[in-house]
Figure: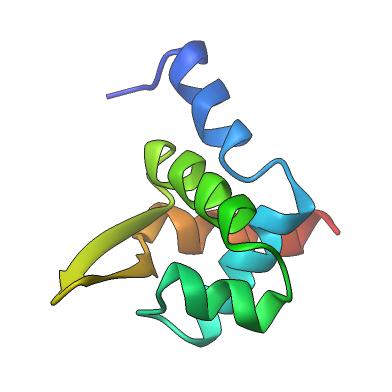
Length: 90
């Protein structure tokens, strides 16, 4: 089923930020990271990374999985496709 333009806009907004592209690349190389681990590796504030991750999850670019009291993140098929797309247009 074809996405509406509004749905496509939500997806594009999910990766239309250099921090979000950094997160996509990091999770491609190292899936299953927590927000704290992502924050540490990208040397960015936890609060900012958490906000970016939430937008990316809404866009369907990553999924969250509970592991005890920690949430792990990994790319979805869409997230991997977006990363390939971005590399094609660079």
